[in-house]
Structures are given as structure tokens and as C-alpha cells.
Image (tube, rainbow, N blue to C red; front, top):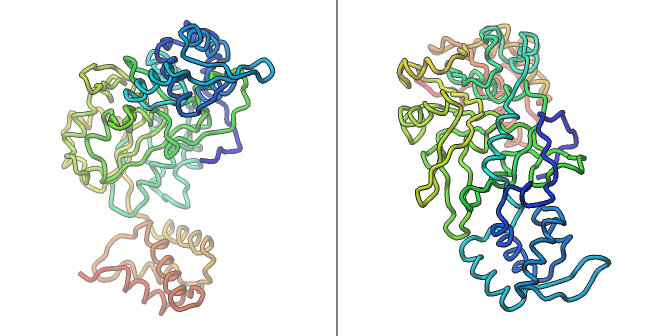
Length: 420
């Protein structure tokens, strides 16, 4: 993933580059395993090369190299300036092969669970948001209309949020926009060590790295935007637990761990394969105490921080999804109602302009009438974009540009709205 070109202010967490094992917080035996596996992959290595690959300082790599040399695990092939060129001896290759059978991880050295705890706590989101910021950064009057004012001052906190209302009015869009109130960046570790096991943490699919010009920063941490993870009907229980890849011996962090210091959106809540009750029961303790518990394959249980804002988004009735005890734990609830005529026209204008469609002056009003006929009683925020997309598709199919006339709007509406 390409790194973003801007670098917002980071939360106050500045880990220095460890120069010895006491500062590293990781055992020498684990680092030795990393070096062995890396050398088995690379063939020939150098102190500087291993330092870059494992994101460790030269002094720490040098300690491991001297140990390996004393145990005749390496063979020095020559020098490049003040650096050694070396490879594994037969004894070293044999040991590296054994360690590779246990785990194939040979990337950035992990951080300790203790350090991960401390980093996540200190980087917990702390922002001041007033009504003006909410309207400009999240609710966008042109998009969300009159219900923008239904948010309370607490909505910017790390407490969870329940967003509900009819389908098609922008609940998911609203939830994703909540990330805009955070103007800082956070540090994400490449991996975390627990009981000598490696948990892969950094995920380029969900973590957006930023340019980092801080040369004294521990390279085991990556500067990223605060994460925002959206999961819908595909959510299953295993995605909330550690997942061990049997082939590589590496654990993958669960969704809530990857979303720490950011936002986790449960879209279409109530339509997952796992029942709402099971999901809510799984998170009663984390939502209350801001900690979660995970278990390694062989039974070791440990605690991780739960510093993520969970946003439940649904078009179902809240009372049908959760009991009163759970809903009480979600202090912030936002009802996203259908849009009024004025908001609908504003949305229509923006969509038409963005898609470069020439529209007749009364097209918005005519589309409103089309949307409200045949028993439909509400205007949905999604209608303008969906109808315009159909007009674009018709134009492409017929080898021309999109046309927005009353006849074409009738045609698009008949395709869009299913007959009762």
C-alpha cells in the first residue's frame, strides 16, 4: 500500500530505538530464531541487512551475531566496509530448519504485550468536538439533512454508538465519517509477542501508513492513520478471536485488536451469521471495562486493551436486537431518519454535479414525485445516487452519454423500484 504524503500530529507515544535486550523487551532466544529464519530465507546476510529486515538496531543484531559465531552457527565470507558478510553453517542451517518448522515468521521483531498495552492506552482517542465540528466533519448538512442535530456532545468519545433508522439514509456513511474528528496519527506495531508466540498486527488492508521522518523512532512501530474497520454480514465468531495459520505458525490479530485506537463499524447489525445476542454477550465485558481476553491455541489466556469505538449500524428495531441491559451500556444512540424535500434536492444537486449529468431544471422535484408514488411514503438519501447510476449504465449500454429527462427518469425509476 502506498504511504500517504501528509503526516498529522501523532498521539504522545515516542518509543526510542532499543539498543539492548533490556530496552527491547523481547527475549534473546526469540530474536535468535528470527535471525536464523531470516538468514535461511536470504542465504547471505550482513549486520545492516538483518537490522533493516528485522527492524532492530545494529547493537542488538551484533549481540546475536557474536553468540551465533561463538556457537559456530555462521560462516563469515568477507567484509563490506566495517560490516560482515556471512551465511549459515551446516549446524546453523540445521537449527534454522528446525525453528522454521515451529514458525515461519521472519519479519519485523514484535513488541511485547506489556509495551502494546501501554502504547494503546496512551494513544486512546482524546478529541474536543463541538456542534460546528460535527456538522462540518461528520454530518455534512448537504448529505445528512436535519437529523445532523440529533447527535449529543458525547458522540466523539470512545464510548460505543448505536446508529439506527430506515435503510438507504446514510447510516454507514455517517459511521465512517466519524473518523474525521480524529486529526492525529497513531503507532501500530508490526507484530506483538505473547508467550513467545507471534501475533501479526499490521494489516495493509485496514491500516493506512503515513510518511515518517522521525529517525529516532523504534522501527518496530509504523505511523498510521487511526484505523476504521467496517464489517457486515460476513462477521463470524472466529473473526473476533486469534486465528492461527497452521502452515506458518503465526497468529492473526482479531478485528477488535486491529481496530484499537480507531473505529470498528458493525454494519447491518442483526444480519450476521452469528446471532446479535452472541455478539453482544461477547462484548459486554470489553465495552464496560475497555479490556478483552484472547486465548492461544494451547490454552494460555491473556488480556488486551479494548480502546476502539464500536459503532453498531442497523435498519432493524433496537429492541428486537438487544435487551435493555445491553442498550444501557451504549450511551450514544443516533436515529437517522428519512430526508425531507430540501435535503433530497441538495443531495440530488451534488450527485448530478459530481457525475456531470445535464438535468432539466425541475428534475429533482420530478424525481421526488417518482420516489413517492405507488405507496412509498419516505424519501431516502440513497435515491438520487442510485437513479443517476442507472442513467449512467443506460447511457453506456446504448453508447451515449447519460440523459436526464422526465422520460429517462421514468425509465430509471421503473428499473429501480420493484413492483409491490
